[in-house]
Image 1 (cartoon, rainbow, N blue to C red):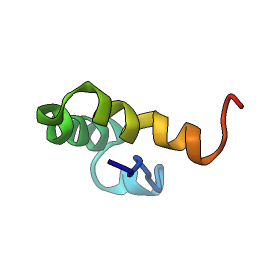
Image 2 (cartoon, rainbow, N blue to C red):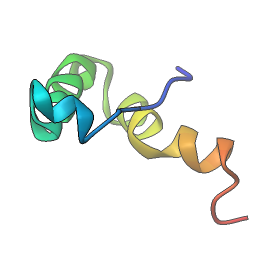
Image 3 (tube, helix red, strand yellow):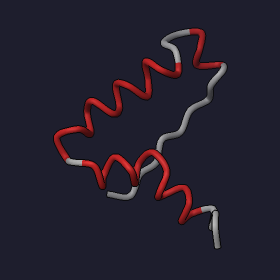
Length: 53
C-alpha cells in the first residue's frame, strides 16, 4: 500500500474535524492490520520526504 494521509486542514475544519477524518481513515484501514496503517499515517511520508535519513 503506497498512500499517505493528506489534508488541507484547517480549511477542512469547515466540515469534519481532523480527528474525525483521521479516526475514520484508521477504522477503514483497521481490517488490513497495523503495517498498512503505519504506512498510510507516517511511514510513506517518512520515505517520500526522506525524514530520518
